[in-house]
Length: 452
Image (cartoon, rainbow, N blue to C red; front, side, top):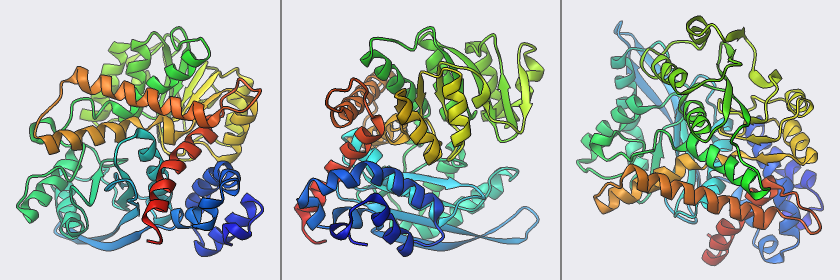
C-alpha cells in the first residue's frame, strides 16, 4: 500500500509483505525501521508525496548467479551467490559479503537495507549493499576456499568497482577470503584499486579495520554512559560470539576498565566469573583465528570458567550486554531476562541481533539501548577510511585511524540524541534516533535527484 494512503505502520507493512513474500528477515528489518520512520514521514509531506519510503524499501537491483567450483576430491560443486545493491543515493554501494549456509535473499536484503542507513550515519559518502553465498567455508581446505572465491569473483567483478560497489567481509569472509577475492579481481581487471575493503596491510588494508566493529561498539556504549554521567568502567559485560566483533569488543571493554564475563559460539557459551582479561582474550584470538577451535576449549584451559552447551549467555546477570554473534540471537524472553537481572545497557555489535519483541522490551524499559545500525557502524566506518587511504595512495597510522573511528562513533551518537530525544523526557530513544537520522540524509539526496 502506498504511504500516502496509509494511516499506520501495519498498513505500510501489509503492502511490503505482499510485494516481498517469504522474506521474514527483510520484513523484520523494515518493520523495526518503519515503526520509527512512518510517523516522521507522515509529518513531512515532501517525503510522502515523493514515495521516498516505498522507493527506499525496493533495492536498486539484485544480481543472482551460480558459483561452480571443484573440491579437493575433484568433484564439481555449485552454490548460489547474490549481490544486493540496495541504494547508492549518497555514494557507491558499500557492504560486506557473507558466506554461510543460512544465507538467503531475505537475509541479504535485510542486511543491505540496514547497511544503507548505517552508512548514512557515518557521515561518509557510502551507499548500502550486501552480498554473499550459501557456501560454508568451515571444514574446507585453503585450496577449496580459494577456488570458490576465484569462481565467485569471475562473475562478481563485472558488477563492482571503486566508484560503483565496494564489498567487504562479513560472517565467513575474513582475511583469507578477502585476499583470494581481491587477488582474482586484480587479475581479471588488470587494475590495483580499492574495490574491496578489509584487505591485508601488505596490499592496501587499513590499520584498525579488524578491530573496528568491536571497538566502535564499545565506544558507542561509552558515549551512551557518558551522556547520562556514567562510564563503562567497573561494569560487568556479557558478550556473545567469539569472532572479530566479539573478541575486539571484549578487548576494548577490558581496556576501558570493564569486566567481561561471557563469550560464545554456535556450540554454547563460556562464563568466567573471574573475568576474561587480556591474557585470556589472547588465548581466544589464537583459538578462533589460528586454530579455528571451539569455545569450550576456553573452559578446559581456564578452570575458573564453565561451558554451557547449546545455550546463549543472556541468563548471566550483567550490567552491559553486547550481542556480537548473528541476527535474532536475543529473543523476547531473553530480553526480559536481561532486564530482570538488572541490565543497564544493551549495545548491538551484530546485525539485528534482537528480535522485535526484545527491541520493544528494551525501549519500553528505558535502558540505554543502541541498535546495530548505530552501534556496529564502526566496521564500515573504517572500511570507508580504507577507501579514502586507497584513493589517496597513503596509509594512516593506527592512532590516527582509531581517533577518526572514535570521532565518527561520537558523531553517530550525537545524531541519535538529536533525533531520538523527546520533549519533557530525559531518556533518548536510540532506535528512533538512529532510524530517523539515517533516513533523513538518504531521503534528501533522493528528493534532490527527482524521479530516478
